[in-house]
Length: 291
Image (cartoon, rainbow, N blue to C red; front, top):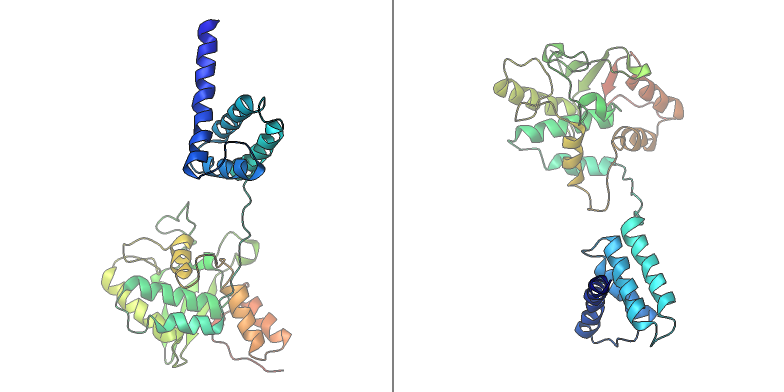
């Protein structure tokens, strides 16, 4: 029994030593106050588990309650603080950012003369998703389960067609109920920084040089199919660290808002939207009927 008492006393001594060292290092009185215990608790939470923090507070109570009545209640508040920090942390809300027309032009301008294949891929995927209001998940693959070669959900290189001032490719069906049919995406020339036709041709030229024998249309420089995370990580670099664009920021938050702000009536927006989620052809840079 005596050995057990010695072990227990040694345990409380070590835990209490953390409190006395903290007070000494910060020039604080050892007499427990709410501010002192709160600061001590926050400091412990930096590199200790909740159970360890709780034991340290219990040691403070055990040693100081006889000399400073009320220590127990103060340490209980410290335990509540530790529980909030370590067990039930407050998660800051996610700020959803829309990709505006101005932001799109700003991003595209950075890639006008790029020699990077991945930059060319990122640019054309962004333009198609924005102006064609195509789901990002239709142009990239899932992060955890990328499709196999020849999968029906992968856009193919041989679906690309070229004409005078126009290119098109076939968007394959997906598992979503409204996306069970193929869609033809048309890209028209605009002669602007966000010209989707030129961006598409630049990508195709680079892709055919790097992967002349591969069947997939969209391929990263390392030969893999781009994932949603790959695209989102690159898009994130153009926003402040606390803002996270969503996978719908280009299609709904960007493209649809842009068409509406351009002066289109509600029916025009609906027509473009329906074209992007039905079997109808979906043209990038569709002409807008003003109200």
